[in-house]
Length: 177
Image 1 (spheres, rainbow, N blue to C red):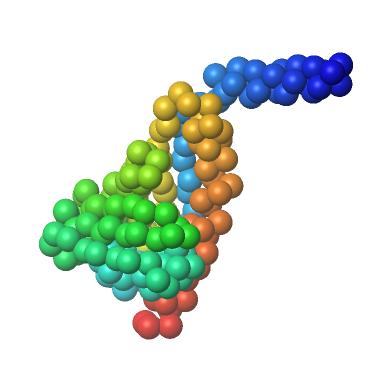
Image 2: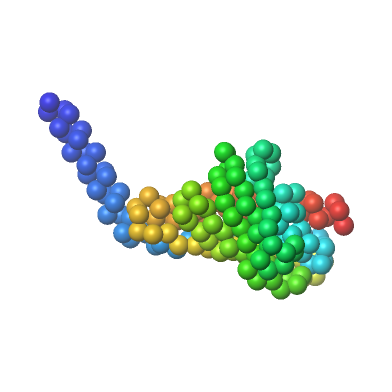
């Protein structure tokens, strides 16, 4: 009994530290990556403004070829929306909220399984011989300690997918240009 009691006390202290530490973790998170693409913004923009084109470069679509995708609203315009259902990548919705032709696409993401959302932008800046494409996503979580730890680790979890997606976009644009 003594060993079991010590084990329970240690487990309790660890859980307490986990919860107390979460109060000091910010609720907000931001993930940002960029890539240099040897193309003009007008050559890149069509792959970003059309959510149907994201299937060609987004890593989540490549990881689950059985993902069920539906599109709603006007094509390549504010209000265009995609919804997906995936056993391996989760379910979600994405909607274009603002556009600046050949410069930026702003979007809203929502993950119903977690009742969590974020907003993001893909920006395209001309730079000498090519363009810099920046992909940024930002959000906030509630005060649930598990969600706050997610916010703390968001960059490490999502950042590599952004890097791979941008590299896929680079290859797609440069090989089609």
